[in-house]
Length: 83
Image 1 (spheres, rainbow, N blue to C red):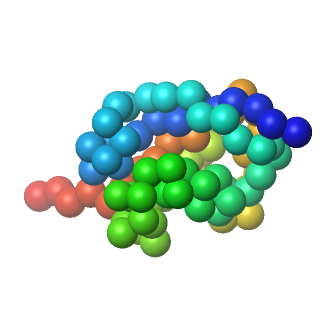
Image 2: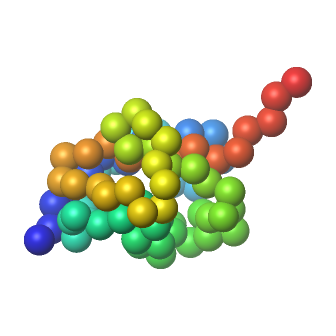
């Protein structure tokens, strides 16, 4: 089954994606790890930072095994430095 999710991109991820929000077609349900793999295929510039990008599904940090469903909102949260 396929569906669409809303993807939010922050900081460096936003720079690679070129926008802060977009709709993304995806075979759902899928795991967070499967989504990230597919998304990095679509945006190869993210692959360099793939291991450090955190995902949030509907406002909650996600584990790699958490499931994404059609209509969910997924946020890409790259590491940020502060001072």
